[in-house]
Length: 282
Image 1 (tube, rainbow, N blue to C red):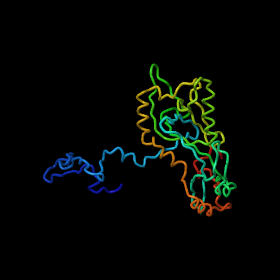
Image 2: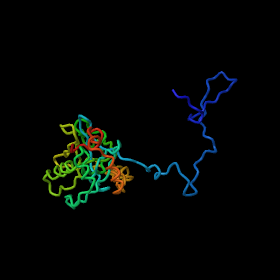
Image 3: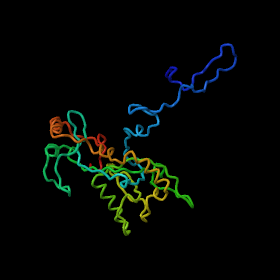
Image 4: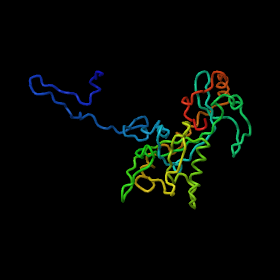
């Protein structure tokens, strides 16, 4: 056990050398310790919520190895972000960068960039479509089914965290197809429904199913106070900056050329899917 120095103790014991009683703990706070009001831009306040939000990151929502995770998309708070990216193993270092190939609005190739020319034959380094979306993860749903046992006459006690889902084109199609398959007039917005995410049988990537085939709305939407909590928890990510970081680094042409020069087709191939976090299309 590490030895604590005086500054690390919450309270310091005081001893009376002439007493036979057990030493007592002094709890009083010194009168000179009081909150100081910031006087200038450089002053920091321990209660500053803006500082608390600096550097907040998102955790990817994934299912357990043998189980299910329930989630709801929060794209009404911030739109999903999409990009074509490359995993590049250059000089022994793995980087995720944005592809330079020009594509049309329908994603057909207009001009093939050098990155795609060099990497098209290197396993797992060719361009991949990535979409990331802010989402709510139901933390206390059944880990095997992703479902809740609804109490009689009330709503389930929902615990949640804010994270993100990462989709390939296949995952995107699955979610859209599930909503369209409801055959309910006006059912077009995936953000209105809960989804169940499970590992694919192949063990590579995830599969997505709508939670309620009846077309019931996302569970949290039925509780106004919970909707308010979700909005508050998601507020630090509403500008989309955290999602954009998940789309890889935007590098210049010169920077890309440096990375490509460090790629050896014979030695740089990514052969272990565990080395990367986007394996839906592998």
